[in-house]
Image: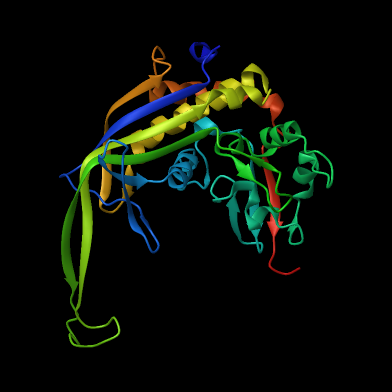
Length: 308
């Protein structure tokens, strides 16, 4: 068992100290009508949310997708997912879509041909207790990543849901505000109104001690009942995504680019985190070992059309 050191632990907790790749300032995530999310820790420390759990989930999912080939990375080939062909020419899939299988391009019953197979495997019956085990097995068959990142299939029913087994966020402590401004020059009509002409604006970046946090719910993964091969693949895939994100994915915005300076496991304390290269080498074997859990064809294709 590759991850036998984790067999008795309910959680795997990882922290990574981040530093701006240049200078000291960084641009945090912003929210409509709120801006940057600042708050105080219980001890009064000034805090800042740099990247939300929702955003980190999307970034972790993207680590196994190669935009240049429009396909899974070589190490992840064989992992099941759902591809949606849109109006016969465009496509998306359950790895890239924000709501995974609940994407309107995948799960909209009246407009999608091919989703019925997945829906039948999930086995929801109105006015009957919902069997979560069927949902878990269906996700293992058709969209394995949803077992890590969760799913809420409200387009089927409100009870068809699974929480994230892998979550993360980035926050900063002892934060300070770096206020500055600029101007957009209009060389033709500098006095024009309505957004044209010269426009003066202000911005606020931040400084602080930045940490990325990751939580892998091992108890939830064991509760899926997928056997050793399924558990090993889920843990290996989660660790690969974390390490890949810390290695390649820390340019969060134009003015928010980090290096990971120190990565450590905080629980269980005796677990040695495998390096990215080790995980990449191990992943194909883990996928092959779990193949019996997958659908016969790893990529399930559905077709979306705006017309009813």
